[in-house]
Image 1 (cartoon, rainbow, N blue to C red):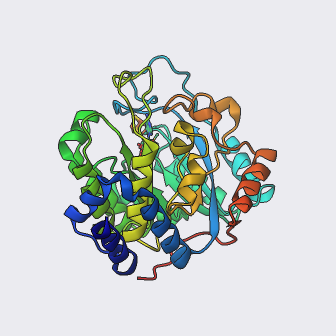
Image 2: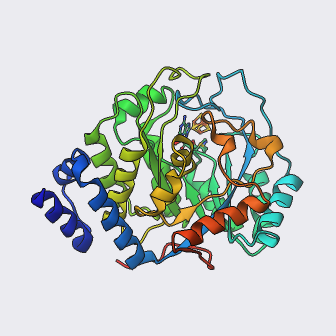
Length: 346
Ligand code: SAM
Ligand code: SF4
């Protein structure tokens, strides 16, 4: 136990751990509470008590890909597909900025080729006229597309690596290229966008060793944001019978990520709340400093079912936001005022 405490102490001050050390901490449940408290202290020291709220708009659930874990995969015929039009996307963003006071909008979708570069750049320009930070989460694109989004005004891009275990990645995304995923993440950074990445936790055959590699990957690529979410099996996917990820191990990976990348943005993810009530609060007390309230209209949101129970989690653009703010205050935190860019302190 003393050795484990020394490791955490070292991570708290130096923000460096070897792969074997990460692995040892991941496989020692007796250290969990000390690890979470250390991540909470580092979070406070580097990014403060403010929580950044990013309003998530799920604007299309069409997807050309077939990721085995995801309810939006193209082979799922048991889903009502939708696309929001430009006016609706803008009206949702406008409400979030002007009525709810949100400072970042996140546009997320499946990989939907209907929204080509020109259409997306038009939408980006419209939303940026609201004086708001804009994040995209729309999948794998070419370097010139990432560059065009940046030039149109986008600020950040989220593309999870999902897992750094190449064999596992290919097992779950059979028609995708692991190398291209990595290349895309590098291209996002090269284009001048902030780089958000992250992983799923609890995929079949995923190991503690691979989580240690994932955490080191976040550090190697100098991620600006890392989202960690437990995998939740969806009944209309090939992984319907899988067990899924646990909140505890997701929180541990998140806390270790905070210790090693102390000044980045880390969301308390919706999937954490979906598998366990108060999962997001536990995450906020173990290193997280961001929440992404879902502001998609219920009419669409019900069909953006990556995993069961998701659409019931999140916050409608009404008094639920007040409820969220109340919860944030109840743990001694507050809603941050700025746009929430990554302030590089290391
Ligand atoms: N299509 C884009 C992409 O894949 O990057 C953006 C949208 S995708 C739905 C966003 C994230 O949802 C993925 O990166 C994946 O980690 C997560 N996700 C998909 N299926 C999930 C599941 N069954 N449980 C938990 N998270 C899931
Ligand atoms: Fe499509 Fe993204 Fe789901 Fe994969 S995770 S099927 S790319 S929406």
